[in-house]
Image (cartoon, rainbow over all chains, first blue to last red; front, side, top):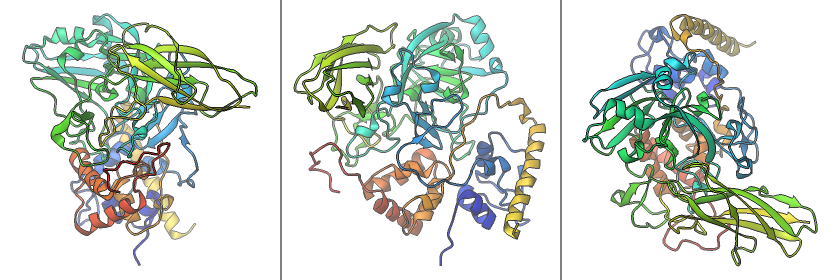
Length: 447
Length: 128
């Protein structure tokens, strides 16, 4: 009978060499000590949050203590969503994946005008770097198609450039993916891969001006300090970029503070990009280098169907034609109902629903938001606030009459400044599920 | 304490020692001021039993949580593409031959496309 594998801990206990082979392709020398190539050491380093010196002396099959401690026995699978248990974070965030850590904010938790850091979604692609003791020593390099390549510390960024604070939406490129049918590949986000925080930093354009972008510089290539999930230092987790015009927008920032506090490690601290309106992956966390390129960047996350949408609509669920894809640039228009929460029970006799929500539209502004409590038969326009600054979200309120007790669904539909509204169902299906923005639906029961 | 448990304990103690060495070797500049997230442990037993379950688990869970896999619902063809995608985009070692077949069979059987929810309309073009 085939040998049964168990948890990592048990696997290592019972057959350490097999565990190495399974998990890391870690090959053991004839002396039964040390590693011979493979990504094993790096993988372990990533797991324990640092490099492992003297790894050549590490006996085969040994699981580092930090790693062993990081794997408490698996609890029985619980029904319902896994809630985030992380210091400083709201306990109602929903974990979509815990390795890498991905957690979304339920729409009803986005009811604040400014999203508190505790409620802000988390999207990691790789293993975050360890927290830095002296953030101001963090270094950013600017190179490539520039007259004067730079290496500048965070301390000097703060000193030499004019800081500004803007409230702007940051949204995961895959936000809304869970609404696609058939299921698109990846984290199954509802609408909560988004939040709107106060970001403090300096304009990327100002820093690029110091470096002097040559006329040949047309695209950025962003790099960060997060490690590939395999731990292989030769592999990049993600490296995306934007057209120079987007990079040069005054709201594209190098950010070190969020909601007035130093940027936390989990949100990309000490230094990250915020390039608002586009998929969150261009707002590189733990940013270390921006290379200016003379052509569209082709790093991991730029090609194939990554952060791309079909040019001509494809058959949902079918095999894609790689030539039929273009880069997803601006995110699409979206609105969410932040109160009442889905599943709310209201007192019998309630005849008016007091609704609150938020809406945003990538690079654009929102022209109007409408709500319906009768499955779209009639629509009511909400009171829509203007944005505080460009890329801020627009909060809205509405009081809507209902004729009786019973089951109601509230639907919300936003329209952007160009007249494009959210569709009834997720449109323009693609294998990795970008650009899904159907109406938000919230069910309430009166009585 | 049985022999196996004692051995595991010894392993851990040794590594606790190693980490002290690591700290002195220069990683000490990095301070853990902010908490790092500790992922939940996963076990193949958390997922539906079937031939290839453990192989699929260990092929995927070396990098990311297996729950990410379990949350997908794909046709066999798209699972097959996903295995290629993981190699091409995310650097997974190539899966070939019998191993690939076994893992693909498990994924396609255990995580097929999900029932359409909240929609009466069925896509007429997609063969399930």
